[in-house]
Length: 330
Length: 237
Image 1 (cartoon, chains in turn green, blue):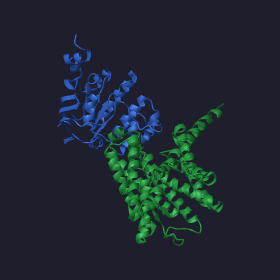
Image 2 (cartoon, helix red, strand yellow):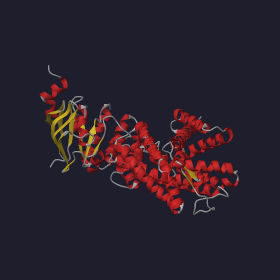
Image 3 (cartoon, chains in turn yellow, blue):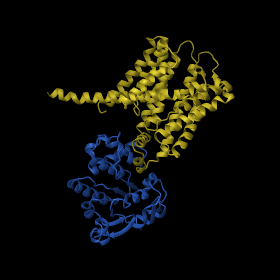
């Protein structure tokens, strides 16, 4: 992992952002759609990674936070004509509150490993079933966002997807910057300490319970913003499309494939999985086949390269770099 | 007043009495040894003092405060640091990051933490390995790292759980020098140890536990001559 220097990483990041900025000039609307989905799930995967990847508390219930964000902004717009941008902030606050509740329940009970995973699925399912049976927000039918003219204020763009593309790109760059700042701060040190060894972390003065709850709340709030974006992009939400276990799976798959607890992991993972899923859906067809393909890929990576693509590349690069001097000497 | 005062401490696990009415003091500036055969309750005592276990009865006073029932992180913030018998490490962190994590107990700024970490690494002699991953260190260095991380929290009292187990004689001499250096720096030490070669030259006082009871206390020489201690270690003839 010593191989990439910091400045090289920064250069790589700047080049990738530049390419992403220019991408719409050369691609078809379909590819742009794929790029938007990659951006969204890179964003959601990063939000998941920040709370779960770094602390090692693997939540399989992040659809709950995404759903809360989507419902908050959509309902606030439909019932009170509040701009989705304000709605997104409301969604983030609600999701952070729910995340705090989830964290307090799970971590007070001392749930670990598989038990924590199952508890997060259960809590997200409770929320989904609650929304299915809540007529005010459309029950199982969900909410259909009224279509208005293209505008940044209303967060809707119909003539071209460019607006959505640049918004998700900005969100992604922002979350990666935030993630880096957090990981380099006391919070980041504490998250990783908790993942590596909770007893040792406690012995060094770390209130593991507090920091796990903080991680969950931050992750929940950021995930909710992704939910708002999804709602504005698809313009239709229902408990089964934004709160289902499948959505949680899609969120965490990117991080697992790309590499958990690395900043680039969820981005690389999303950039691998989502084009494959979208292409499968578009050209092979078959309801659910995209999930089969993505699932196989995820299981394959988890078994063969448990540190994800990033870990694999860095290891290969390190091995190559350490081999070079020997070649030079001989 | 003693820095650490343990009074009539009892800890049970079901029917097993791991600690039975144990009392003793650790004075500021001392190195106190705690010895006893396997299963005597030494680590249990450490876990009670550092908040990992809650005692069934008795009191623990540290620096004038009752610390019974505090959580581990709270005892750390009060000024008690510890190492673990079964060596623990933040395996995905580098040595420097691991020690910085300890230093962050006293500051919110990573720069300050890193400064303290560098100082501490130099102190324990790990400075040249600061960029090595904790997970790829040897056991000896991992123990050193555990100690460095604990010291970085700025403790008044450090509890060491078998620092010398598995070390060769040269390494043991290094550890002895290091422990004296820590004490001379103003930190009190309370050391659980099996290796007599370490405890005899370094400890000012030694307490002996056997089946959860304190059976002897005194200078290393007194304890080594004590009938009850010899019997606990070697058995009755």
